[in-house]
Image 1 (spheres, helix red, strand yellow):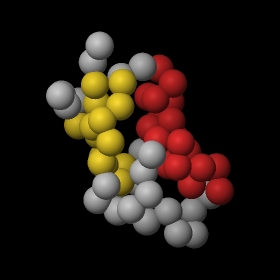
Image 2: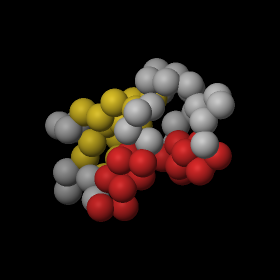
Image 3: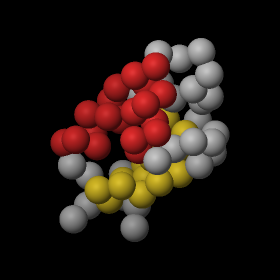
Image 4: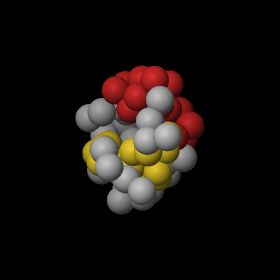
Length: 61
């Protein structure tokens, strides 16, 4: 199964509450923190929702 690496680049302070909860669901708390997640439609939808705060690397191992 493919994996993607998601890195938090911007602070969630003063952002929409749903976006903060989405970050928490992805396991991101601190700026610069990264997580390797499965590449599936559920995760892609969450990333699309908060794309202005995160960076995605496609070929994570």
